[in-house]
Image 1 (spheres, rainbow over the protein chains, first blue to last red):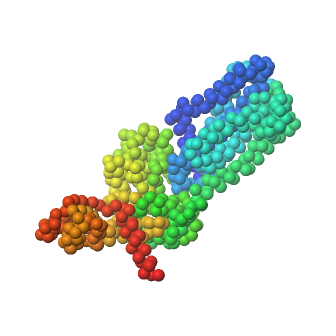
Image 2 (cartoon, chains in turn brown, green):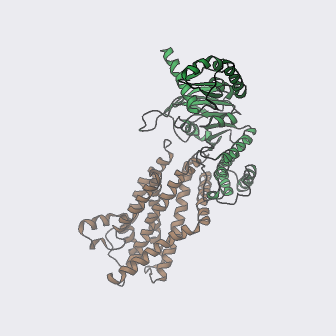
Image 3 (cartoon, chains in turn blue, green):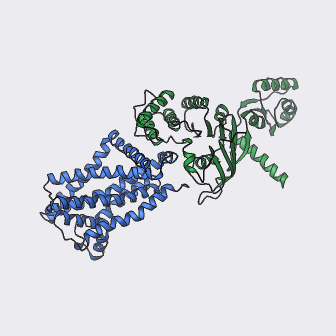
Length: 251
Length: 320
């Protein structure tokens, strides 16, 4: 067990070293969501209403977690394509360590990204109103979503072949992100579209965070419960799939 | 007799959706402490064999034992005893050479300090000390393969798999990798080297198995193999078939194998090229036949394998 922890840490440290060697890419990634928040807050804020920025931010936090899928997937598929994964698999280490190391590093990355986005939002006047405890619970839910999406990213990274598929996922991230309660309330959409958006896991986390932060926006029933259940369901599906895919020896 | 470092018997592997098996009754026995060459053209199954023996892939049928442990039932024990140097330099391109070696050292359960000293030792040994701090993305092809070799040697493995170490390298870089490999061999590690180059196997390996369509078709020392395939070929062209016919007995008398004729051309395998060339020229002069073209060349691998394949086919026909 201690061996697994140590291997996991060594592999997570490898990612941290990547950040140090190529800081620009990581920082741009962190600032990207800030830019998207400014763009939508600025563009639509005036048209939709004064409190749109407060409505938008919890959605942006959830979207930032969602964007992490892409980073995880790219890193995993790059390692597989370059033979680094094979090298790891030929080493006397637990195969769980490789995925756990990735998981730890990407969670740390997203936590920093979230902190940057929250800092930027606070500087622009966004606040939480329900006390530190509720705010921490909201951040917990957001990171839970990220944890679940990690396994989606690892699975996709192991399944996709080549850069074309990565590009396809990068494009698909947008409609999935938009078709949710991130930017606008699904109740304002045409009924069929609203239903899809309502069922988007991002919507549950966004709505539950709004509730916990005390930000404006209608909170659907059971938002909190769904914000816990959705990530657990995604993890229950994609964690075993990823581990299976990683262990499968006939690639 | 000591147990072989690698023993494979009747290994079969078919990729999903592939029309033909990648390995089709693959047998191999590699004695400890030797450099063993697995030679074959593209698609013969070399990489599949290495991936199965290095526990990266499961076999469909048969049995393989590496360093005393079965690859199917004891993969963890096998992994503790092997090193793998990939066809594509499997190192982290963003990290520096030194950071790579420390990382792989730590993953081989060396302590922090031990991993660091080992990294420095290996950088020194492979002539990478100066480049140790640079990211691998800035390395030349040869440097990258040498780093890859070093990474495979962190914990002196019992068996090292070296999969096509010089494919795609220029001659200079190839020499660099060869001298690195020779040093490694001096340390007594068992090496299974796969290559598509006859010359590379000849330079480095003490025994060679030739792989063709997923099975070993010929096995022996480089000299034994050369004796069966002829070391070099002399191609002669004459003005017309009639002259070629007159020349044939004189040429055949000095050849080390069956001559091949085609219209006005004669090709013969020879073992000692200079001697044979002089002997054949002298004989032709005595016969009064002047060739219009004389070429001395190494056999191509395709030729070697086609030849083996034909012999294999003959044997099967005789057996049937």
